[in-house]
Image (cartoon, helix red, strand yellow):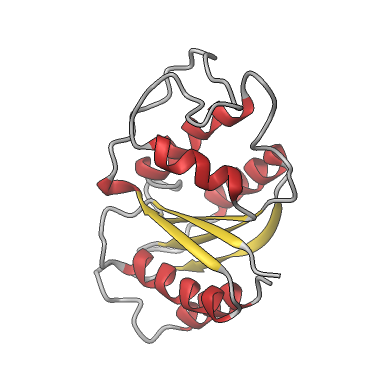
Length: 183
């Protein structure tokens, strides 16, 4: 059965190495009949979480702030799979994706938890200049545990400092196969 997949792309580069992983993943996922919606977060107006606990999960736009998260909330609510795609910055995800993840908390507030569980899955696509993924994987694993999402795995592509460095590398095929495996 086809799945609804949402990709949160936290790269600041539309044609960078992270986007190359996203493209390969998307091709694989679509070849299995899935629908993929990508949000390129750097082009979106998303403010940081205020920690106000004023969200109401059952509203179409659950957060008290009105910005481009209003496009992401309905897609995540309807999704089967959420893909987190990001470059590695200071041993963690980019600020763009961390801000969006923080704001997803509004789906856990108020009238019912529409974020945790719900038979949702996730995977991590990540590119880095080096290979120091341990800290971010610890965070990602804790996030999956908290959200009660099935962890489909990750594609970690180290050694990619410049745009285009990922071309021809095996991680592109891994991303394609990960996408194709979602049925």
